Length: 304
Length: 325
Image 1 (tube, each protein chain N blue to C red):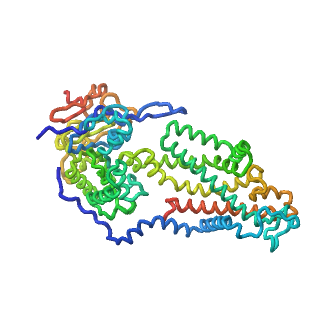
Image 2 (cartoon, rainbow over the protein chains, first blue to last red):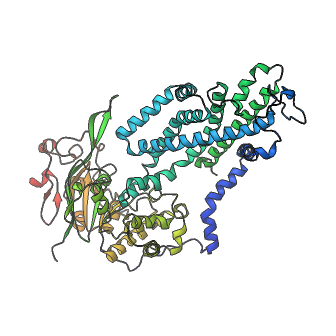
Image 3 (tube, chains in turn red, cyan):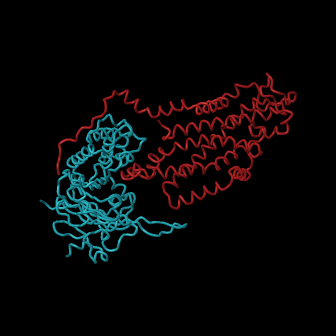
């Protein structure tokens, strides 16, 4: 066998300084940020989302009234300087209730989606990676959950658990599990075929470590996009449960509940419905725009 | 010359992939990717395995390492039977058996730095403290012809040849005895191929490695191998010392294969053996000798009886009925 003394040296393009090295390292992450800011709908959506988050955070500082402060003298008043969005049938300030309602909607949306992401991803990961009977069982459970209209399934779950905001949250989490589970499963199915996963096995890595270090990090981007879009759905579903009386209970200032409470005043005092409705609409819009933007940005095919 | 020491012995290795059909996924047949393959690899040598696409050479490599669970057969490495080890024992054994992959783009996790990729096998097998490992990574990078500062970079910042060097460094990190190189240069430019081949040769000398070198490029295999095995349709048809095989091929398939190698002389007089027809499907291989459907010297016995893979003298193994004539 011919043996040459040294391997031919590899010429690296141009020697770079330490600082430039580090820059190159962070470039891909920064690119994602930069394109996020260039993406118009993502910026608008992100702005709306940020606005509502801020609203929720500083709610008590923003308004002079309590969200359950009843004022019998000021019932069903039209919007004015004192009551920006008017008052409801109990004389409660609608603006105050909407601001506090942002807390509820975001809180429910966040934890419901977080819950379904955790449970769904875990199940999807197991189903996709191990396959076989584990996959069959998990996938059939997903199919069963998806076979029901999600709201109907949610109603069934809440009626079993009893109507309350917390139970509505559980129901929303459960009905969204298959969405994330299937997404994760399909990602894992393709990622586990990659050579670097095989390489990790060849190196002698344990399964859970491969899942954690190689499969997960390469599977989570679509989950993030779906999570943002799912947040919008969750807010809507929370409102729907509130509207049906299965979610938030009085006097909680939940937007959907506010809508249903003011149904009878739709003609005499339309502001009681318009403003909570708009709050729901803008929150959902914000998350949808942001989710769409993220999907565009994180899709490698969209990169120039 | 002393008797070479056997490092790896493969006996009657089979890997069948089930074909499932119908609504209940019932097994309706088998793809016989590797069908009764036996050979040995001696310590310190390079055994090249050649064959066309789909002949089962990659699956052979993967079955030996149990990246695909073999259907049947024995793989003896040093003193242990790899196919009988349990999961944890096999995992530990992988320290001695490493693999270099074909595609340098797909075989490196795009979200990890080169340093992290090379360090991983060390971490997995609990070798060294964190600081020692970092040192080791730098050392390995230099061994494969890269620079220590490359550890900070991500795979997409490297060229194909450099990525393959990272793949080699990862395989070498745990100081393996046997490296299965599955088409390690076929995804690279020709100019880079020779660099990587030379690197593999240098490393073999330096660390006393044994290679199972899988490739479809006959000239690459000729360059690097001590002995060469030829596979056709999941079976080993011929195996011999490199020069014996290239100068005096005995199996008609090897003869046809070698006659297809381009010669850089347009006036060279040579006889090309053109095979007709396609490779039969491995799900339904021909009875008898798998090559009989395309063999120019086919006899009646070839259609009925599978030829034995026999030593014709001097370790020149051939599976062909012509040898019995």
